[in-house]
Length: 390
Ligand code: GCU
Image 1 (cartoon, rainbow, N blue to C red):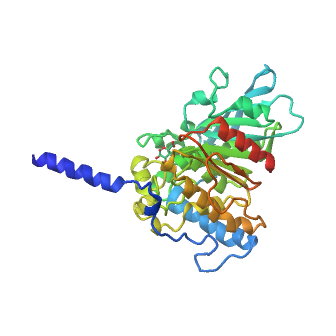
Image 2 (tube, rainbow, N blue to C red):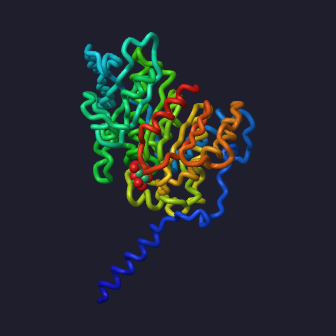
Image 3 (cartoon, rainbow, N blue to C red):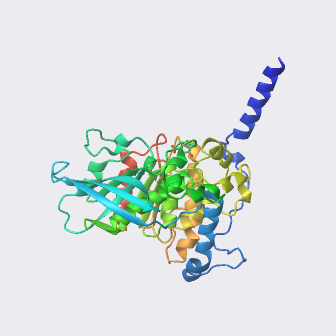
């Protein structure tokens, strides 16, 4: 009897800890950290000061408190390209499969990239790079399996190249084995630091190595690489674009908590929950903010601001309240003051647009698709419209 009571109490306690709010009227009053105020209390009024003083500070705050360091050193990088001469997609595309091998202190890590480029492009083309966090069949190079998650035919028909790599090449998405990839092989010292990177950092690092490759591919316009991610992959695409300014634009699809949604709203998924379920995504320090969102020196609008003046497209799905659609829209709005330093006027309306009403400006894109947590042809059609604008 005592044992049953004990179990019940424990279950109730865990329910209380993990109770999620889906009621707008219960969103607590909150004040976002001022993205334009330095830690010394100085207000930033121009882009030069943003870039010199505040941007590095905000980047470091995210590194130290959320995503971890992103090492940029390695000894060498090699690309093994297998390009078949067979025309793909009824002659519209060429398939390139690239094995990227990166060495540090004699140890290699390999990232496999699937890339389709429009056949005989007259000049280097822009490319969408997906950080694939779902099954590899979604990016099937043989096209025997086709998926809306990576609609290669549609992207090629629109004149863009499309590429993908799988997150497991860098870090398995598993709390017990995540360290067996990039971390143990190339950067074991990161595992000892409270601000060391974990899986999401490793995936973002991988996106930058694919960017290194694009800079060597004459078919690709490396100044027009759009990094795309869905959900945990969308948290990663934001962090990759924030860190690596070579990415021309970022698409973050249904990325929710510790992605594009504001943490302080405490709506849907919360930091305590994400850290409990996915302890291998963010650094050790992030655990200090479980149930203490207001103690964080950043919020997610500042992550979007780090990408300025480059374009960002964020999406939600109407039934995916877990990812807080309104909090995502508000984060985009709260990043606008940094874009304003570059003379960019607000492109999004003051209120969240309705369901299936994409708002697409040259710098900000947002939509809330009717339906479930996913990335679909509808989403991609709008990313293509967005990419055409800039
Ligand atoms: C879980 C997790 C989210 C994440 C999502 C996904 O729902 O709680 O934070 O975005 O998985 O990656 O699909």
